[in-house]
Structures are given as C-alpha cells and as structure tokens.
Image 1: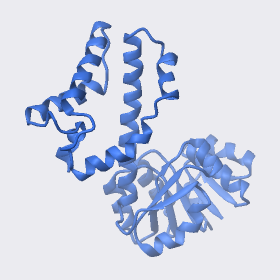
Image 2: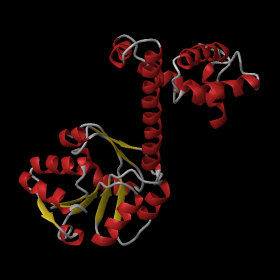
Image 3: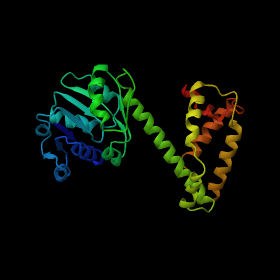
Image 4: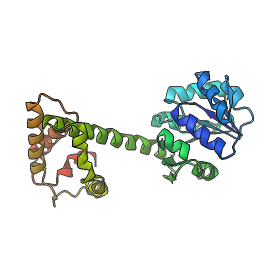
Length: 275
C-alpha cells in the first residue's frame, strides 16, 4: 500500500496514475475535501496524516514548500520510506535526508499535472546509492525519465532549482518578445508566430557549453553588436511607453562587460563572472 500526502494538482494526478496501475493508495490533504474527491478514483481518504500512512510500504509527499513538508512530517510521523516531490530549499532537503527516524528521498520533478497523470516528464534523484537503488524501480514507473545525478545528496534538489531558474528566465523572455511585438504593432498571437520558424532551443546546448568553457575569444556574435540590438529593442519599447522585464537587466550587464574590455568577445561573456 502507498500513502500520498498532498492532493494538489500534482499529487492528485500521481495518485490517479498509481490507482490505474492497480496500487492501493491512501491519501491525505490539509483541506480534507481534496483527498475525499480522490475516493471517486478508488483511493481511501483520511482526515489525519498519521492514519493515512498506517501500514504503508512507502509515503509520497507533494506539497508547497519546506514549511509544508516539515508540517506534514511532524503530523504523520513516518518511520519508513518517504519520497518527497516538493521543490524545496537545499538546506531543508539536506536536513531531512540526514534524519535517522525515517528514510527520506528527495525526488523533485519537472512535470505538470498531466505529466503526473500520464507518467511522462522528468523526475530527479541523487544521494546514497542504496537508497537510490531501492526507489529507482518505484519512481521509474511514475515518470517518463528518471535522472540520477549521483552520490551528492543535494544534487537533485539543486538541479531542480537551476532548472526553475531557466524556466523563469525564458518565460520572462517570451513576455519581452510579446512586449516588443506590441510596441511594433503586433498582437501577441502574431508575435509568437515567430516560433513556428525560429527555434532558439536548438542553440541552448552549444551556447551553454561555450559559457561553461569560459572561451569567449572567438565570437559568433560580438558583445558590442548584441548590445546594439538591445539598444534598438529598448528604443522601440520606450517609444511605446512599455517596460520590459529581461532586456534592461541584460543590457546593464552588457554595459558592464563592455566597460571591462569585452566588446569584441562573444556575447556569452555576460556569464563570465559565475565561472
């Protein structure tokens, strides 16, 4: 039997997928009606987290943050295997991994609710080799791809935060694209038609490798030229009295690096200070 604590969009769809595969699942949620709704799918709902985990072979958690995870653990008091899919702080994950009253595994995900329902998307894992080996067959059935980042206990937690950083950045960049389109008289729908022909995703890997290598002396796009284009973009949105999110911050960093003598380096030099 499996216990799942936290019946938000992710937890509820993980539960439905487990039930469809024939698992017996006990569920709990801070708002009891969300857990109760899963009884229509075959789960057994409990008002008390401690009762929900009674007799469970393993406990899954999918809640909002560190405080919620710690609150659930304090209420349920599990002593066996706990697999937490919540995006949390590194310190919080390490503290829970080190506990001796339970076997805690942090397995954050890059998934939406439908991914959880369909066992697609990406799940992350790292840490003690015995723990990883134990949970791998369980978790592999819940995701499209399970990635093990090795022995470093907090690696999965860290990779999740790094990935979310990128998601926030490119989502803000799409917002800026729509903003520039508006300044130039294009609707949002018309502006995003660019992506039917232009796929910047194909360049991310090569660009990331260049940045990580610290090799900027043979530019594919000089920083000075990239700064010129940022200036053109800013002029258009200024005329339309709009404010972008990403471009002004990038332009400021470009100016700093130009001042430091990097005008003719590849524009990825803006990441140099993190190397």
